Image 1 (cartoon, each protein chain N blue to C red):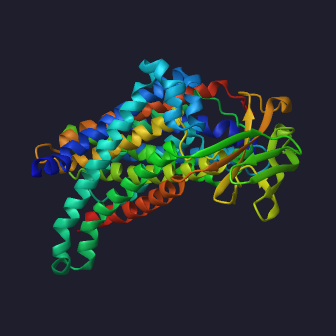
Image 2: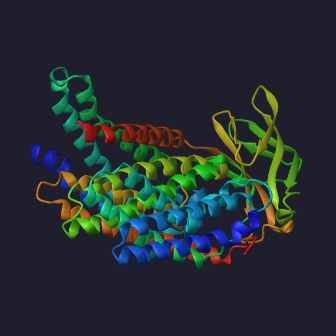
Image 3: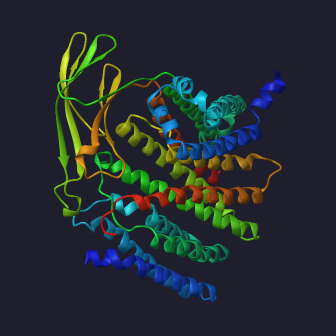
Length: 256
Length: 253
């Protein structure tokens, strides 16, 4: 048991796992580049559904996704054991070393825990989201679970008037939505990059543009993305904390 | 005036960078440095003119990787030279005129025009993301340059390690900013797209490199090789993406 625990917490294992993930992702990037139609649906579906619908029929191109999950799982275990071992080792020394030195010593473990939360957050974002993509049509009623619905009341498209070189190109889009909950109803404006948060969901406005045809209005379609993502907040918040900790830790490490 | 700067400042900067390179190779590092400085000023004017070239201030074009990457490299080198007291380190810093010139010359072959910002680019997050991302890349490339000197028995202070650590911090910040922007715009913090997966690959690679120091049997030479490998990976990814930029519609050439 102790041998397994030590193996799981080995820094060498950690290095080779991260390195293997890096290479796997590098290979995956090229699979995506040359098979965009295979991987595009993965952005808007659960990974398990995608695998049943597409991945299993193209195992040569999709096996790197399976490998990524396996490697990420082992990296998660390894990161947890490494960080836990280090904290268990440092905690009894906290009084002798003083707060500053102890903070510097413990910071890498906290960074690793943040990373662990990011991994878990990503995992839930991939396996447990609820998502509905609906093209925007005026006065259309979109029925959602739990007796709630959304209606598109109006839409507005703003185009560049200046500078002359950009004239006519799409600048901003907005729509007005009537959000009907079980008891309440409210009117809210939705713009690109300004999602609405309502009833535990986020509602985004996306523009589907045919490649390189930004000037041509006929090729653009507004899309409503209604989403419940249990992992996204964890990923972004923990990543931000991880960045803060690293920005503090690396200069301190040099001093100590 | 702005149009003139937009058209000519970058080629002028390259002329000065190349002149600086010639002086450096002729073992006149001081003259080379001052020529390099003039080139950098001209390059800075060009970067600013990109933001003003359409008559209204647009910040996004300032951070186009083709031009902002060599500019960031030059800026980091100048800062390092300003703060460095060590003559040996200064000599290595002077040699960075070689990669700066090389990347600037590469910039000449990429389209210089400006793309209109669509609705999903109407946020400061775009500029923050690209600027920090490119500064990180500049740190990684310079880290590899210093690692090369470390392998040759110079850079005994292992400055390449600090550059890689700084690059990793910047890269992580750019990733979180990018993730937030992608979430607001497309509802996804990470797309299954070539660009995003390549970024994740580079992040993991440098995370692995930062763990190398804890290997008791490995030394800084191993770290140097990995630093060089990281820069190679970055450049392959970077320029394979930038080559596709030729097909984007741009304004101004």
